[in-house]
Image 1: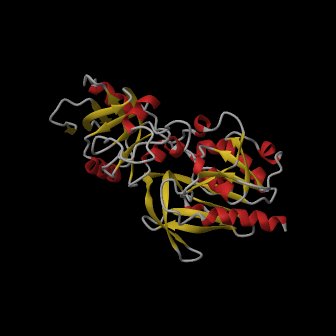
Image 2: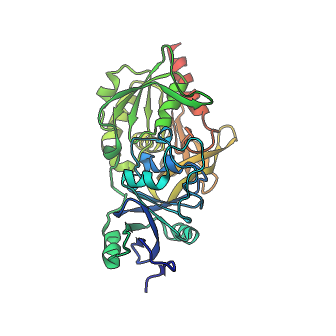
Amino acid sequence: MPASHQPSEKPTACLALADGTLFYGKGFGATGETVAELCFNTAMTGYQEIMTDPSYAGQVVTFTFPHIGNTGVTPEDDETADPVAAGMVVKWDPTEPSNWRAAEDLVAWLARRGRIGIGGVDTRRLTRAIRQQGAPHVALAHDPEGNFDIAALVAKARAWSGLVGLDLAKEVTCAQSYHWDETRWAWPDGYGKRQGDGFKVVALDYGAKRNILRCLASVGCDVTVLRATATAEEVLAHNPEGVFLSNGPGDPAATGDYAVPMIKGVLEKDLPVFGICLGHQMLALALGAKTIKMNHGHHGANHPVKDLETGKVEITSMNHGFTVDSQTLPDGVKETHVSLFDGSNCGIRLTDRPVFSVQYHPEASPGPQDSYYLFERFAEAMRARRG
């Protein structure tokens, strides 16, 4: 018989795993059902940024930190226009916000944005299950009356195809190209504007977070953002001094069907190239390496990464379910960073030109700012190219 974890009062939400395991709790946010992969995130802050990170498309997020909702939400912290994660699982029901920046409470925000939440779940047990068995396929349902068709929910979870082979970048990319000049948030004035001439950078939007674009602008980049499906000819038509490959969701091999030919075309022009997360994985594919699905991925703001070239250890933000297989890196491509959790690849560079990428998120939204130097390295590469 499948395991069932049910509170004493009548539940209004149910999380059904594909193996038949059921978690009951109190629903909040939108009502209805959603089917996705379940992952866990260990960050203690930044739940709004996590829910609006396009890299979480096709995923329900279990938050291991129990106090979710206590700082409310504010439009300034959205990483994209709307939440992208399919839903959220928390230990305690979200509380009323206590923060001077809060413009709305989390429950109302989720309801208005059509995202489902479930509280009162034993997230420690759920996280252990994910670590031991891998990221499961789940169906999450919220019904204020507490009426659930359990057999149907389990069947939907089992029938979901999963993220392998799934190209989600097309679903989360921008509708059309645009220019970006907003810089990082700074006390007391908030976000600023880039001034003067800048390095002409084309950023490919596979699910780009706003704070990544802000970091580019903050180091002097004049950023033009193009859709994920842009060709090399379309990229080069902007006469860029550098090309940026953004984060994003889904299987890099699937997105690589159209992204890899573009990247190869850009590499022929000897331009500085910088990739993050999905962009890192697709750069590796374009250089001849392979990517693989991880057991449960890396999701959090406290992941130690070692820079193999300097010996420095950075604490980083991560959100990825696929990884570059370092054993497949070809000659001329050097592994630069590795995870100190499991030794998986976290960075590469070409040995003969300024082309590099990292698996983690140096824009730190949420998370530590140890890795901001990578944006400065990209700007310096373009400065050196100018001569």
